Length: 180
Image (tube, rainbow, N blue to C red; front, side, top):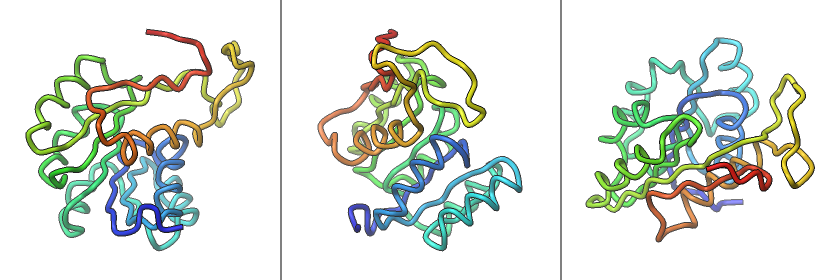
C-alpha cells in the first residue's frame, strides 16, 4: 500500500502502544517515519518491528534527527509543549495530531489558531477505555469492550490525512463513553 508514500512523519512520545501503532500504519502506507521511544529496549523493539522505513530515536534526540530529514508533513505527539520545538520543521499545509488526554481542549484550539495562516491543521484524538499492554481490568464502555491502540491510530491518521477541512477538533475514541 502506498497511501502515505512521499510523506514524512514524526511520532513523538512513545515507542509502544498508540505511538507505535501510528508509526506502523504510516510505514505500511509508504511513509518515512521518525519515532521516539524512551528506553533502549523500546527503541530496539520498535526498530525491529518497523524496519528500514523508520528511524527510532530517544526523545531528547528528536530535534537533531528531524533536521537532516527535511520538511515534516505529519506530526503526532502527546501534548502541545512536545510539538512546539518541531513546528519550524513542519511544512506549510501539514497536520498535527495530539493525544487529547495530554492536551486541554483550549490548547488544541489555540495551537490550531496559531498555525492556520500556514495551512497547518491541528486536531486531537481523545482515547479512553483502551487496552493497556499489561491488560489491567477496567470498566467497559457502552460498546462492551476495550478499544485498541490500532483503533486510536486509525482515528489519528484520519485526522491527519483525510479530515482536510477540520482543525481545532477533538475526536473521542472511547467506545461510546461520551466523556467531555
